[in-house]
Length: 304
Ligand code: PMP
Image (cartoon, rainbow, N blue to C red; front, side):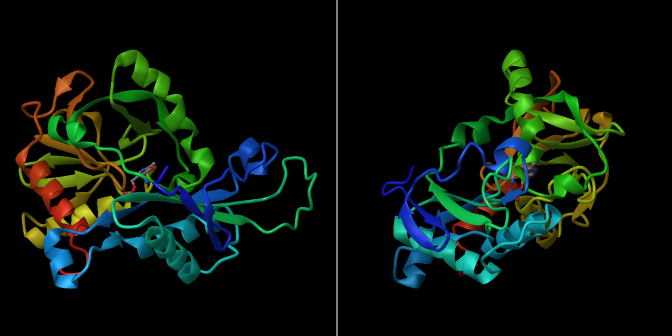
């Protein structure tokens, strides 16, 4: 919890509390609900000097709120608040918590009861939680080891495009696999055998100076960090930017470098897959370069 442990709930900033009954429909069926994970970053010294104050800035807020509304549309849930109101709510919550890094978790959920004990015309709720961010430097510096999961992400893929609670059942199910094999994360295959993504992050492989990631109409959540990384790579003018194409196991095993992207984790090198070293088993130069540029962006969002 944050210092003051404040949340935004249906229009007001209040002490963080748990509002949901165990009879809530979403608790039983995993939907209809939609959520987001967003980060607010304390800005760099250079940025603060230019602004004349200590600023905290929410990275890609509009993109996250757009995705929240896309997810809601997919699960057929109408938000009682507009996109602008939700964006303003996130900003107000960051201001209420004071300067510093934060992780924001907006969740829009149905208030229907599983057995319709309460009136079914009750409006959905929107809560936004704010959490401190854990230090992930160790993972980023050393990289992580992953294995390919025995669970697969199937087609049709539309559900994976929604950030809805039920979609995370597999990600939770593989935790026991991860614990048993001592892995830091797993990669899911789709039902054609292509490698899709990690539990809560997209993947990229690097071959030479080309970076490749599975297409966003496959069984993945189209990540906002993934998009930023592709844009950074394009701006760099290294090769022709990034390529989106299905990845086979062999593509992964023979990559020079590999990394995972996500709002919380940012850019995390993957240095071992199914016991095989990726490249020389250490975070590579392309991955490190992209991670550094990502860090530069999130800490300097007003003035590039
Ligand atoms: N895939 C899944 C399943 C995720 O939960 C996440 C985290 N939101 C991602 C990919 C990465 O998306 P983003 O970069 O937008 O956080």
